[in-house]
Image (tube, rainbow, N blue to C red; front, side, top):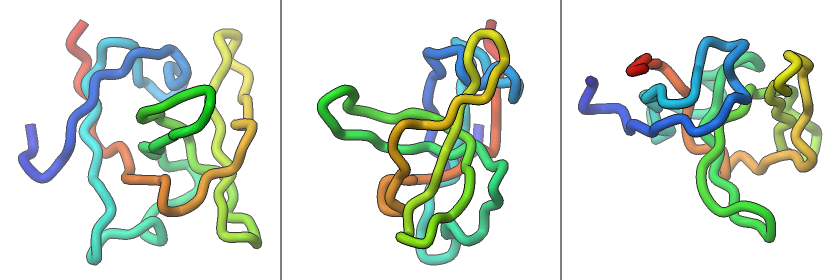
Length: 106
């Protein structure tokens, strides 16, 4: 494991099509002055912090388009493999980093 990454255990099936499964440990490179959201592309798997009425914590989503208002669309995959766009777009400040390592422990 890389000491420069933050690690999280995946609890969901929403990234199985991207090779990330429940129980996997993902390594996330957090954004800082030298590594920013601009260094990622539209297909990067992002760590997003949510704090709303429905959820409080981190989720992983695939980065979609940058919108004109400075937010980003994101998506995940349903159990049938279909792409599902997140209900709300995310502010750049809520996108905390990008998944750069996946450890399959199961």
